Image (cartoon, rainbow, N blue to C red; front, top):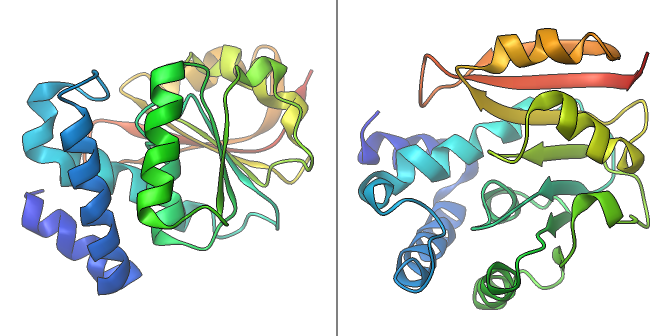
Length: 207
């Protein structure tokens, strides 16, 4: 998918005003990438298809989730958490332990005017104690699926939806997780990388 096609997909589904705000976030991300390695330098040329659309495609998969916060684990550059917040009204919690990235996220939230919608938790997910259980858990390139379920399960209940981009390892990670976890697991093909998959999980609990 080209950069123009990616922008068009987002504008068609979420509206031009949100797509315009997402373009502002893209510029903030590009500018900060000079100072710290938020995303690979090579991927900045395809930021819309490689990062923004890759994050935005999670939102339609969350339509069945209940009310509550969207908790993004290891947010780093704000992917997918800040993209979710820009393109929706979802209350969003960005869990990120690294200090420089925490400051970047806070600065980006301020510039984008999202202070009332987005909270940054400067901690590891294992020590995060949510005030309410998450309706959605997302994470991009943080840990393997069994480890991620273990580290986040205390933030969830039976109605929580996990949305986890996993690349080519999606199916094998689901099989590994099923040895210790039960629930409904599905791998959704990525629209940005056809060979990659997004793990969608519900009703997850230890066996």
